[in-house]
Length: 172
Length: 177
Image 1 (cartoon, rainbow over the protein chains, first blue to last red):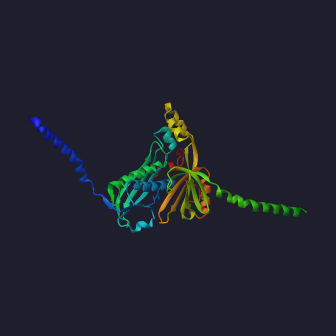
Image 2: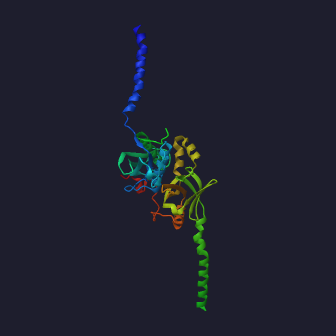
Image 3: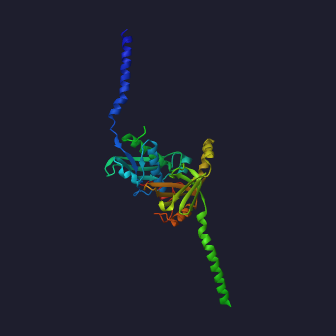
C-alpha cells in the first residue's frame, strides 16, 4: 500500500532532479561577453606560406558564417563605419599550420590526403585588449575540395563566438 | 641598287610591324574567359559559372543575365595560382562511387588542371573583400596582366602561387609548424 502511495512522490522527485540538471548547468556556464558588433580582420599568415585563395576563403567564410548565425552587423577589415562603434569586438586570425592535402588522394584512398589549417584566433577590443583566445583548425578528410577546410574552420570559429559573446543585434 | 632594295624591304617591314603590333597588343583585352566564381563576389552565388573580361578599367563577370563589375583601381592585390578539378562531372562521379570493388575511384584519377585568380579589393567604405575565380589553365595570368595594366595593384609580380592539389610532391604539401 505504502509503495503505491509513495510512487507518485518518487516520480515527481525524479522529474524535479532531471529538470533541475540543465538549469544548474546553465548557471555554471561563464557569462557571455557583450559585443556591440564584430569586425573580422584579414587573416594573417606571416610565418606560414598560405596560398592566397585559402586566405581569402577563410576570411570570406568567417564573415558569412558570423552573419548566418545571427551576428549583425559584421564589419570587414578596414571598414570606416566600425570605428564609431562602442563595444566592437575584433576577430584576428593568425595561421599557425597548413597542410595542403590532395583531393585526388582523398577520393582514391579515403584515408590520406587530408587538408588541414591550424589557426590562432584572438577576439580583442579595438584598443587591442585580448578578450578571448583559442586555437582552432579546419579540416577536410573525405569529400570536397581543399578549400572546404576553410568552411570547417569558419563554422568552428562561429561556434566559439556564439558560446562566448552576446551581440545586442543578435537574432536568436 | 642593293641598298635601295634593302631600304624598301626595311620600310615594308616597319610598316607591317606598325600595322600589326597594336592589334596584337589589344587582342586579349576584349577576349572573355570562361570562369567559375568560387566565393566572395557580392550578390553572386558561390560556384557561379560565367565569363570574365577586363574592359574600360573594369573586371566584368557576366553570369546568366546578370553582370558584376569591379573597378580595377579598387583592386589591391591580384594573385594567380593553379589547382585541379575532376574531369568527370559531379553526377557521374557520384554514380561511380556506387561501382563495385571501388571501381569508381578510378574516375578520381582523371583531373583537369585549372588556374585560380584571387582578387582583393576595397569597397567605398574601405572594407576589404576577396574574390576567388577558377578558369582554364593559362588564362589567369592574361587577366592579371590586363588588370595591372588598367590600374590594379599586385604584390606578387613573379611566378604564380604553388599548386595546392597535385599529388604530394610540392614542398607546400608538408605541414609547416
